[in-house]
Length: 134
Length: 134
DNA sequence: GTAAATTTAAACACTTTTCCTTAACCCCCT
DNA sequence: AGGGGGTTAAGGAAAAGTGTTTAAATTTAC
Image (tube, rainbow over all chains, first blue to last red; front, side, top):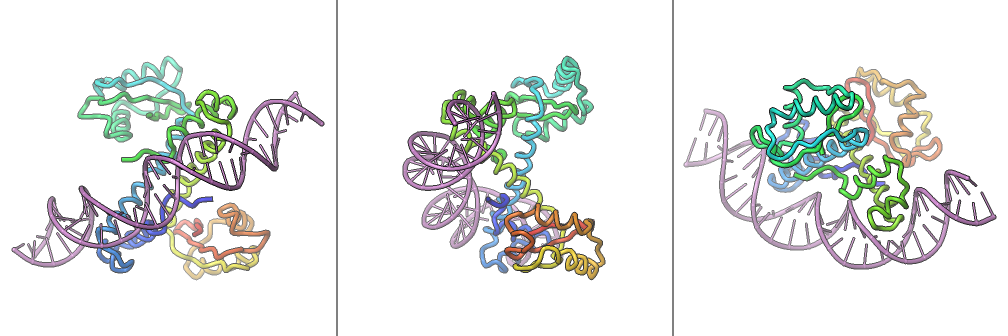
């Protein structure tokens, strides 16, 4: 039975960081370079966001496919499409237009450039009207 | 930027599983052995619990060390110790005696055998009286 | 009790992470 | 310009993770 995602080293650095120590100070305490502390901290944060994403995926299991935002689509037209598809399924989207656009962009920054969709985005919805992307 | 913890293979199996397919059926669909499906599914569940544990750790960052339950201690004596230490710190533990014992055992089953502590358990508490273990 | 479904173990090839060092670069501040 | 805090790149060695097979064992269902 493995532990969490974070290595002992990573936890160590996060704890010191929480206390407000600088990377340089931590480097001295744990006897390594500040560059290494930076790398370890970065890996730790990366692992944490991977953990979040993993649990996020579980929600998509309870969700059904709603529609696909085709590459090239204008982001501002997405809400209209999504609302229409949700209505067909008798579901109410939990987000208003503005929140929806923000949620889209926040969920996967690399997939949008300005207001254009760069690659296909699959949209999923659950009974609560929550949206997930894959 | 890496994705979540789950590999494509693992997500695939979880999705089919969610639909109610057996491991044998999935094995045929994805062209491998049923034993392998089992292994993959197990790894997926393992990854999910690691993700949970990882985020759990973040809460401990907001917590302070309360005490250590020494190896060999009688589990039934733990609440008394914990309440006393919390009081010293002016904090109120969020759990009553029974819930506390259950929380201890649930949090790390391998570290208890019957009512005995098998290896040292570090106890942390936050401002809300929530307890975490490390 | 038999068959189907699931789980486990061992071993192997392969890929990915981690941690580390060195050296450079960025931004802000006085 | 120099110092403090932070980040990045390149490279290497050790550790951990993944998918797979085969074979045995265990649980569940009829």
